[in-house]
Length: 376
Image 1 (cartoon, helix red, strand yellow):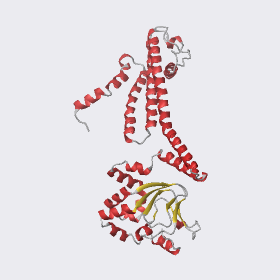
Image 2 (cartoon, one colour; image 1 turned 90 degrees about the horizontal axis):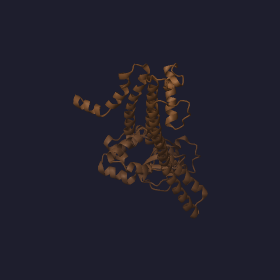
Image 3 (cartoon, helix red, strand yellow; image 1 turned 60 degrees about the horizontal axis):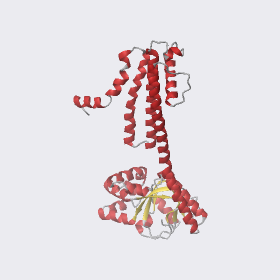
Image 4 (tube, helix red, strand yellow; image 1 turned 180 degrees about the horizontal axis):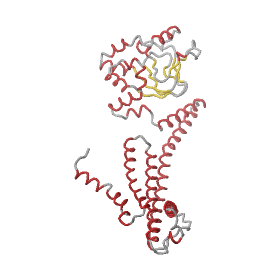
């Protein structure tokens, strides 16, 4: 917190002093209650909030860009309307626009509304001609408003084009890439059903990540931040997964940092049959089930959802899996590879003690697997 008065005064004079002075100037020359409308200039401090939103990253940059432009436009319209109303009230001649158009007896609120109407029609170059300038100050303000309107319209068009281009450029590149992928697959005689699955998977990645693959997004983060992100993404799972819950915090952080983020399409195989266990899958979203001829596909215990994990039997026993795990819809998961697991063990031998302490967890599920002769 800044307590130095000189620094506070210096920062205020360089910042909001001009705005506060401009908003209070009318009170030096007039006593009309509507002059309080110039206090709208204080709303300019809302741009501080917009800048804070930008730094926080909670809102989309494009949305903030639109909000900033609309706020500035509203502030400009109110300022011009107030200046126009000031001219109508302050001028004593019969040529003042309020007197000339017979609006001098109207309620101050209606007068200000008419001023807003004039400001908008002049600023946008619509100019219906029902409220026109005649005196010298009115002509000067009208010409200034027209010049400002040209800049405002040009700026608005430029912003709209920039926003549209920013939204469509990535999509256009994605469409070109997908079209090339479809041609390549068709040329190599891939079945249309498979090509359609590839297309749908690409659409899922684009809709959820704008084309950025989850593993790439995490790989670009620094080590310390990647650990925090992984812990928060698996926050619910950590409480339900013994392997993670029983670990010391530092060991769990190292393990989460080494996991690889994956996305599986409906029908995709998370763990294939016939391989020696080399991975454990921790599910974040979506649903999957065990696929085997001995199962009808309706067993609740053979299905997995967010927070579940599987593959530890074949992983720890180094046995060959005799069944597969298939995604029922789009599944987002973290995968622990054996090589990374062994690296964690080398770093901290106490990891094996943790594994022994959780060996009895999930006994009911493991019994169901053994009764059906399944190893995953």
